[in-house]
Length: 334
Image (tube, rainbow, N blue to C red):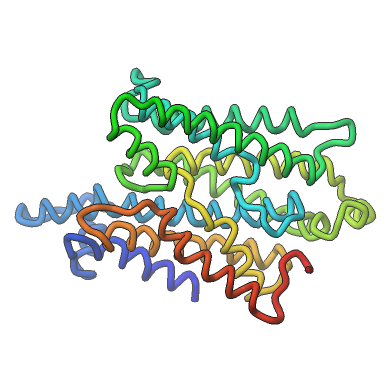
């Protein structure tokens, strides 16, 4: 059902918008784009909307939703905290520093159109290294140290980002930086898709192979050890995978909040806590969610766009209140 919902969502994301395109026309034009077929000259503008603008944007929305949802599952197992999400490690805050420097002051201008993505990824990489070195101890990386270090570093990087925005020489630059910080898929091209998609596919593949180990880790380090799992070693691997995938996604979409926090809980409510099931369902659910969030973001106040984070917060807050009020569902067993 989710696979069918994802296909329908992708078609709706391509066909609907400020310029409406019929579903049959959208499918035909996508086929022409993949096969190199001919189109009428009168359809050139519609073809460009479908092939150059909407299709890569919708596909990236699927990738971002799938990646954030999957990393959210891994992050909650990594730190054994029901409030964990892909940004708990401070990766997004580090990426925000790099991206804001590009938007506000034109840093890395020699990289052209890739400056924003590369700067954001370098910021995420720097944040990952700093958090890892600060959280490491002779006993390895413990959940509490990781959460506290990631949270503290996130505040530090957020302060740097705020200073950069405050010092922006142009008001429109500050507005653009704020828009990116809340998440956006505007300006996405086909060049934005391959690296993010590869990172998400590899990340999901690794986590699926580690599903049984994640089940053991979620029950505590002592229980995991009795099952033959090395908690410290597994936690290091999860940290690297989660940070790498999150960094790649933040570099192309900004910080899209609530997806990695909300979707894992909704999926567990449907299929239980077994990570083999959760990791099979979460990417599909996350992809469907972000496609519709992006569609709402670009149509609610068209021709202007809303940041994705505004829509995810508007949806996520009521959902979480409902989950907390719902009997039969518990956060972290409490």
